[in-house]
Image (cartoon, rainbow, N blue to C red):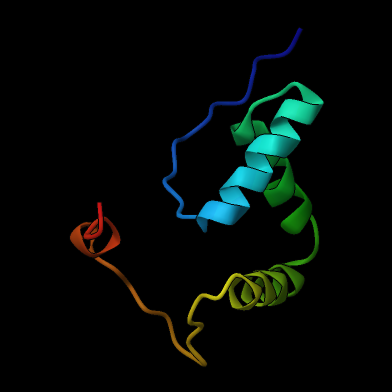
Length: 84
């Protein structure tokens, strides 16, 4: 048997209604919400790098997030966690 791939934690924010749907799907599949999100991300990034950027951009817009039109906005750790 091969070694399991190491995992890393990441904090994400989801709309409450989306999180409820993720949890419902997890219950239906008898798995964890984390696994549902992990599988969705794996499907999302399965394409070529340019495709990934486009798909992430579309996903962010569809989720109601403000999407910058150009450049990269870097956030500090404090900015990322200011609403917690």
